[in-house]
Length: 83
Length: 167
Image (cartoon, rainbow over all chains, first blue to last red; front, top):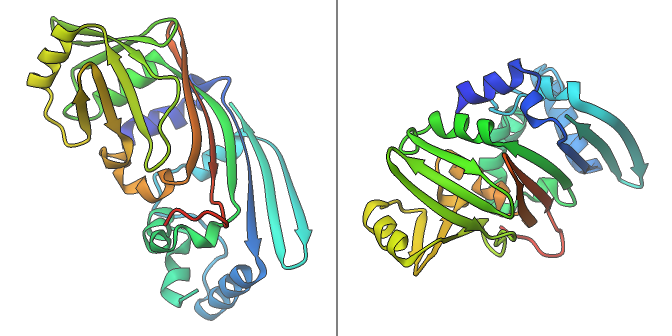
């Protein structure tokens, strides 16, 4: 399965042409603050994605739009991906 | 969030494992919608990468018809347009005949595949290699499958509903 995924990434997701995914992710203040606090304490780069089968770095090529919305206590990331 | 949780937080698999008992509470309110066309070649490449499906081939036809081939044996089936998302996602297929259903019942013995008459149900949440993503799949709210020749089109809505957790 990893090989299959690597092939799709290497081919720039051409096999998925026409795909579209949109989403929104709300991060609460408490979650963001605890991440920051822990990152500073452990000198960890914030944020990085590791150990995943999901090729996040390559997925950024597919980003058609991205927007951040801030309301009281919540930062929401809105995005749209297109292949 | 614990320190251990943070250091693993960006390892997506570890994050899912740790947040799963709370129904992905850290992600409550997260929503994804989309449409993904899966071409026949991509599906077959994925099947080839996994046993016991390695020598299974799928042909995707119009009107949700699919043909499964394994050596000389082939089975025609109709894919249910609606994926059952009440628990973990389950895909249903109606086999073309009772004789085929009887044969499939004798040949296929997999814990995530059940056969009831001519209806085959595949529980994606129990199926390797997607099983480890079961806590994520549980939040799939709606999915439909439609086909045109050579393409299986998946439309979906995934939502971590704070008012209706699926932990």
